[in-house]
Image 1 (cartoon, rainbow, N blue to C red):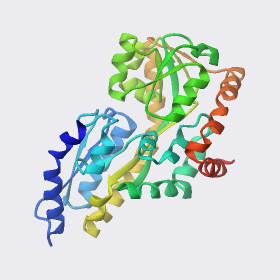
Image 2 (image 1 turned 90 degrees about the vertical axis):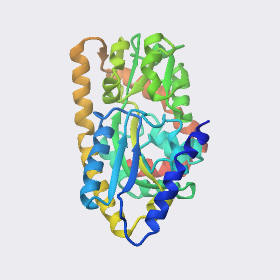
Image 3 (image 1 turned 180 degrees about the vertical axis):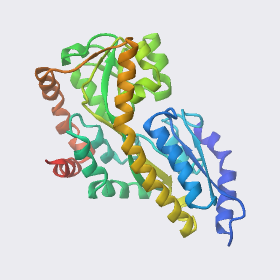
Image 4 (image 1 turned 135 degrees about the vertical axis):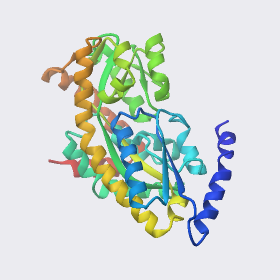
Length: 333
């Protein structure tokens, strides 16, 4: 059981709290930053940049340890680990907060809600983003930043040009009622699965396809086991960089200020490279020739939008009609 595994790590957390209570920090404060993707993704590079800057701006008072590729916890386990203090920092995808009772974050999963990066950033860098982070505080979590991955494409072992092409396909999704509703609207069978298990599931036919930004698809080599992909850009995948609130509030003020500066610069860096990394990954996959990529025509895109639009109304009670309205107001161009 995960909780039992985590208890073994809590002795270290107790020692840390004693260290923080001391007048001077003799040993560096260890900050474990766990995530589930590869080091060469936008999130992986952002985490490495934060590690570099955090140690610089705290004059070595903090030792950041980054654990990529689910080395410590799978995506279904990491939030519990954070709340129990076994790790101090995560960058989970925004869909992960639903099981905690904060379904508002699932607004980011709604199909075709963000017409561009510029519209998206009006939310993540504005008042709506701050409001969403405030909803995590009573869960023992402090939100620090939003990091982009990118807009998603669909892949499978058959062409996905129009909604009817999804009928009966088993499509992997991360745990999200919105994504479940999205796949149901398309006529597919949603399959919730940990990110670390997707490649093997695609390879063995346990699932037929999935959705990902190109950088995730490429770094996990999913293009090797998917014959077709569609440049639908129907949905957004982003992350919330979060910390254990008790740990964060217990830091000396000067140390916390150094970490805040490091996070601000790492966020600018991570978001600055996200689109570039996805473009590079898409070009690399096209060059390998293992997957045929299809760009939607205007008519095909209209069909996708028509089929998926009802998901917004269907999910309004779960996400909150006010939250959806606030996002749409912020993104109005």
